[in-house]
Image (cartoon, rainbow, N blue to C red; front, side, top):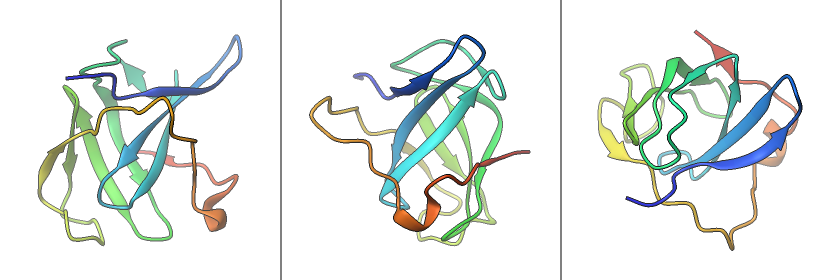
Length: 107
């Protein structure tokens, strides 16, 4: 397993990590310390669950480097567990334009 996360932004009070969601086909941000993180870049675990409400609902647990998609997701990978793809340092961090500036929900 390679590195799964990318540090997108950091201040003394908060860090924002992103990972590529294979269901949504774009990056999802995770704000630390809003979410508890085990400090692993290769097998990350965050808690509580991560809910990205739009443009399609994506609700998951991130555990040990895998995404456990929950049953309330609105995509084809709901109720499945998939490994977070390895981060490619040559890839630009891209979010969908309609999600620019939106926060994910800590549930």
